[in-house]
Image (tube, rainbow, N blue to C red; front, side, top):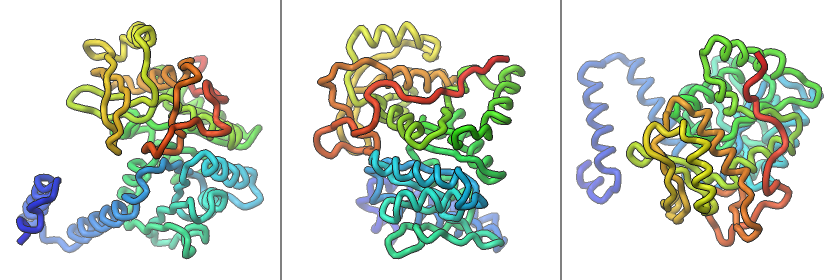
Length: 362
């Protein structure tokens, strides 16, 4: 019966392998708690895929921050403004669905453009009204690990405001998956109100200590940006997708999909400046289809996967290129082309405000 149901399914082989894995687990596992874990994780994945599939064409900004932040805190107002700016730039806004910073971001985005990924806790976390109302989109996850999976899988940008252990866990989990190449490059912005030194007081010092001990590479600072206003943070995110569209592996080659074709002189300069990023060979130009079937210009290279920071620097270099005024760039909040591609009003054509948290003085 299963074979008949899957006869025409394009992923039949993957489904069959998954079923075989479950059967192999069943041979040696009879504990109820083990199967409760498996059933719950699969249910989280099923519900998450079903909820996100219709919204894959729009990029999403995830906002992390403390559930304890009060409405009179400057960070609350900043998160609300950030979400409004994100929606104006064409993005949807995703949070953990709770109070504090999460509530502020969903409030700023409005129910129509908000997504909440709540998690079941012994101390129940109540979903905020902007995602739990009739117009909101709220998912309940049984486990943190499946929730984190969808945060990173569906996010096109991360903005982290001051928070406690959970917020910092989300930040470091994101950095881990980005630095190890398990998550494709996306912009990660540390945001705090003006004159708030939350990030500089300890995180920059932590990076300095790690670099001084050679525990991270100097270029790993390029994985992060810092901002002190909503407009600055969204400008940085928009700039990240100015020329860069997405990246994925095809065999052992990384394809960097672009919104604009590069000339021979630009390609030559990239090979000169980023030769150390290539494990072997050079950076070549070509074309490849994106996830929506649109043919795009792309760069191909075999990267040194231990140097993700250098890949971010390559992406920054591409986005800073002085392209001709006639080049038509895709709006940053749009994953798939839907008609003529025009720059988004209010976002910079070249450059962006703010500074990378690059190498600090040691």
